[in-house]
Length: 279
Ligand code: 76R
Image 1 (cartoon, rainbow, N blue to C red):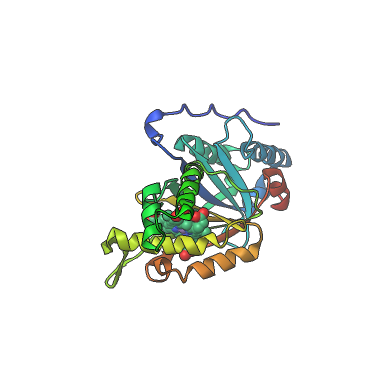
Image 2: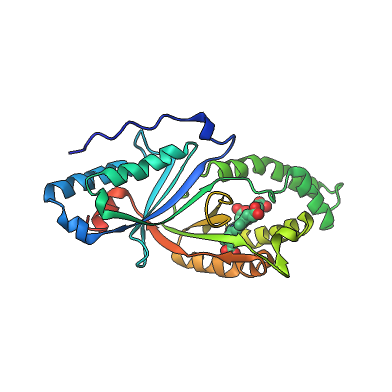
């Protein structure tokens, strides 16, 4: 039997962004001792509540809500959530905390960020300039076709960056990262032209994984301890290793990047997850 949930928080337009969504990655560990201290009835109720709270189709659910089971001791499960309203995301955390098995759900890690279109995503004009720098002639029909194709692709790509669809892939990895600021390798002292060229090289190396890995880079400067969160959804576990390994050789990563903890998890509905976790 489900306890009625607290009313959904009222949307507050002042904490929505002019564009893009708020994002939360949160990791939980099950406290077995607490779980065992609950009556069968309470445990049953809590399990039903959890399944309900984590239903991405539920009316009160944030725009995106994905659950997954985490490998390793650092956590048992992960939630990735996105919504224009950060309180709608937080409401899920609070509903979990206050449900019948809430005391057994211990958050072990979280990462707060927002979606964005990076300043290094070239505009159509910048893209055309880049092609010319690489030797294409504006009179060449192939040049014009490339520019037109980019112009057609760009709005959908930016839509995906700001309002991401989660791909139907079974594996997800998350890690936070910074661009470093040390003598001899200070990303923030490089001129825009240099950073932009390095990011173009990075994009070229990343595009090789199209169709196997789908990446979401969310910005966290001012929101969390790292500057970006990297979320990689993959068709198969080995592509995760391949992409992270090979992109380390991009100069933008090799020279300037540092990484936080890595969490790999396997996507599961809340009901399957409750079974898997023996809640
Ligand atoms: O279309 C474009 O030109 C977009 C190019 C692009 C940008 C701007 C791009 C492409 N990324 C961009 C920005 Mn990325 N990315 C990472 C990581 O593990 C590592 O070494 C770093 C972690 C991966 C795996 C990855 C994958 N990217 C960024 C930024 C923000 C920089 C800023 O704004 O200052 C970071 C921190 C970052 C990190 N990136 C790609 C990929 C892949 C697979 C691509 C190509 C595919 C695609 O464009 O969809």
